[in-house]
Image (tube, rainbow, N blue to C red; front, side, top):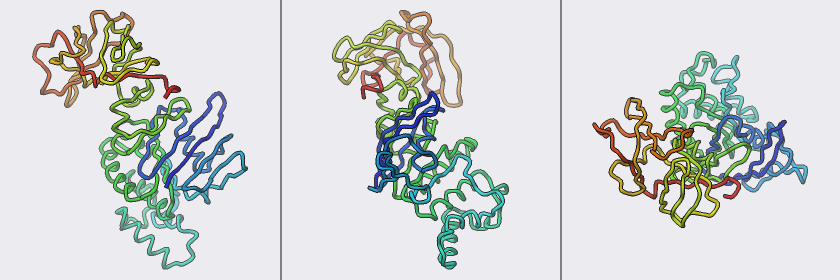
Length: 351
């Protein structure tokens, strides 16, 4: 089963122009606030109408502006988990889940499916509770049960963990991932959290200012973000403009250094990113002297900021992260970085 999206929608000065495909498994839409993530979900679900384009699910056209097709939400077979879960506050858990079965006329079938959902999501015993009597995690499970009982072909999740504290968020991510893997169809999850995207998603499409890059496998995206927006969203602290000076060599004027890469560089190189964990005191590749500025202790790591002697004055300090047990007693005079950890960046529109 495959979802195909190619749509445009203008909202004042903002223009959403997104085109991508999502297959079975969990595809993340990773982007900053205002990048168009939630609007994309609403267009797919039929809550918002694109100005032009097409949306297709498993070969069925949900929307086609040129042919005048715009299926109503109830006919799209799409399950939408809202950020606030959208439970009916005056209804019990039982009543909320049964709302997803209102088309089923056989009472015995409704009761059997209800019991299955209560058991599957660990809600047995909470049938008579109303949403205000439930924890955030329990509310989430009720909302997901209400969606899945309708047997949707596609799941849309809009920042499903944003309202939870960090401990509960991690626990529910582990639980929900198991549920989503067993779902079997495509899942599209909106998030601005790189750690959440890494843990939850099989593939990630980066959204930036209404544009969507083609989904990449999660580990491939983090290993080679390719664009500035992807580098920022995946947590690369060290970024600068760069230009190609050789097949495997770039110049970084802001830092006053040259760097060698493992992969050949394209002519349209525009920048470089280096993750804070990649610097090594003993590496003899891409080695340069450093001047340490400040450090900050975290529960399990040290964050150390430094500058390069030839670095331009107005540029930001570089970041080096290292585990607590690897912090040297005396700071090294130079750091190096392996060529495979030098991440070239290219214009988004050229990829």
